[in-house]
Length: 398
Image 1 (tube, rainbow, N blue to C red):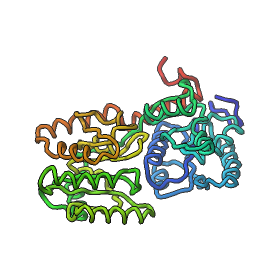
Image 2: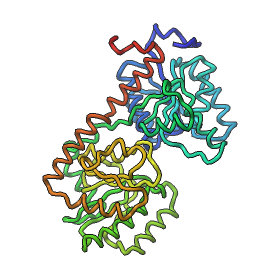
Image 3: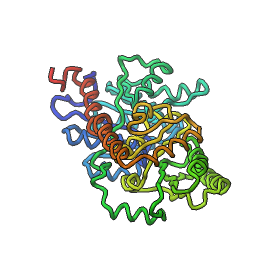
Image 4: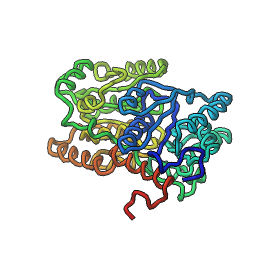
């Protein structure tokens, strides 16, 4: 371990502090909570600092201590004060390693870690946009870890080519799915029925589900146009599209979707029920799950969770989806923004035979279990921490 001002690590369990803006919802937050819980179960001291949110309760139930700091702020003065706040925290607890999961807190956390002589880890979550030098500088905080973890090979290639992170500092660890939660055998018929009634779904209609917050790049408008074309292809409306997600204050975009649905005469073939707190049940209701993002996703959690539930997936052919969806085996990939190609893929997905659907279901579940579990993700992160604190031979059995 680097020379730090903390107590000798040999006299106590190693301690890790993860920092992120807030604990509201999303893949970053879910990964943080899963890893914090895994660290605690493995006998490490596990701490998290953020601006807070509803997911703090999950940390507390797992015995993980949370510290509320204004880490979501991008105000330079607040970020500078966060350096001192974090440094005090690192020394008082004490902490042996700092892990930043987002850009704003990464700037403060890196300075605090350096001041305390501690290893610093970042998770590079996406191919961050940078159309000017200032934005690229802002994004570069995620490239400054002693070890930089990319959530897909796509993101790793981007971090290396765009931000110059050497391969010796880069590790690819895919996001993991909790298979105790996303398990089709654990979703009761009552949960599915309750959700079906809430969404006003009719028997005999194929359900086409697009989960994701209501924001333009998630491709909800592409799906709506594809649904209209799907009705033309099939010559009937024997399906219903469900666009699932919170608008998070983007009411104007939600209103645009309503207007587009009216223009396309989707009528009773569309539902926009808002947020959903029971995603496993939502996925069980779906005959096909769509990820129509018009910009590359760093990973694409929806596609993996859907496959874990044995559902066919149609995703956009870029970004992390190329690593998570097996073309023709667990789903299909379509060009970004191409509503015609999406309509054709939807028609293929809802037309497959029961035998084909059963085979796809089995393949999809096995694919996620082999490559994208929370257990594997957490074990890989803990190995990165172990390498930095104790050397690469530690914990490997060599």
